[in-house]
Amino acid sequence: MTGEDELEELDEDSLHNSEALPTRRPHPIIIVVSLAARGGVLWLPVAGLLALCGKRKAAKRALTAAMIAMPLGHLVSLVVHRRRPPAANLPARQALPEHPDSSSFPSKHAATAAAFGTATALADREAAFFVTPLVLLVAYSRLRTRVHWPTDVLVGLAIGALVALAQAGIGRSARARATACRLAAIVRPVFSDHS
Image (cartoon, rainbow, N blue to C red):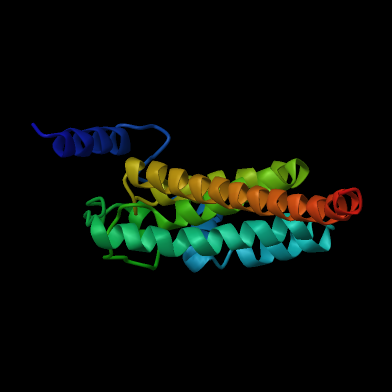
């Protein structure tokens, strides 16, 4: 048995033998959240609410991270093609009007959500307190509606978090360079006058 076969067996076991993922139709909130998160649309009003609450910096960083994570997830899915869970006849799956046939790996919903949530947390912990449950609900909705395997969602979450962390690192290094340039501009005349 190859590593890929073992992973698929683990996914199938966790998806089919989990009490957290029943086969019955999900609660309407789960369905609405899953549909609203399609294409990252859910995060636009969330960012708007953050901005209205005075968290503009967090909103801007979160949207930027989400806009990077989504196409990155699509790019990975072009390279790694994986079939969706075979759940077409389950009420949990039939609850969604969408029937995606693109690669299941990784979950783009999860990647976008994690990027938005992680960037929010890095910029403003108070805002993260409200955004994180929504991120987790989006990720869970993709499992609960049987559109993704568990590893699709986990990898999507990891991609999104890494995008936000990289964005924060780039922002910090750019700020550090700008600060160094300002200090150099202040210090240079002092030393040039004394030479």
